[in-house]
Image (cartoon, rainbow, N blue to C red; front, side):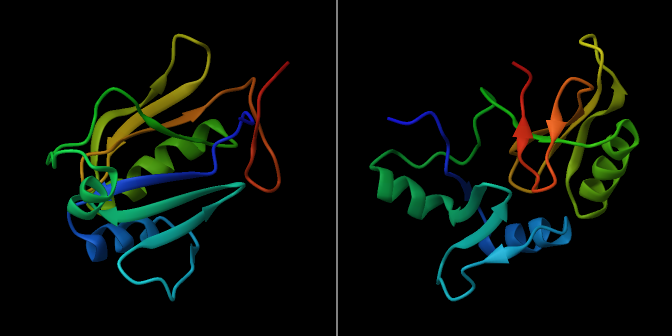
Length: 141
């Protein structure tokens, strides 16, 4: 198995509402012809939104109406000031800020929000990480 991640699928309660939220963040929706799912291009990674009940059925697992808090999705910014701007935009679209932008113990700046379905996102600026022109994260060696 190659060391890569291609697509993250979030099981959402209301596909139309969730799609509008991510479109409101300015993310480019792709594969518009696909029915019952929404796809977004995120640099070299894809995000899909799929109704939670359908996702559970497809995966053969029991339906649970809460997302996991055992992980966060992260959006790394190109600048310190961008952290607060992203959090403000997410909140304006109906997201819930769980931690406002603040300096981090690891030397950067970050904050957290939950999207409309409760998925936890970290918005972070790390002075040691590079965000390429194509949006891809470049980790230091």
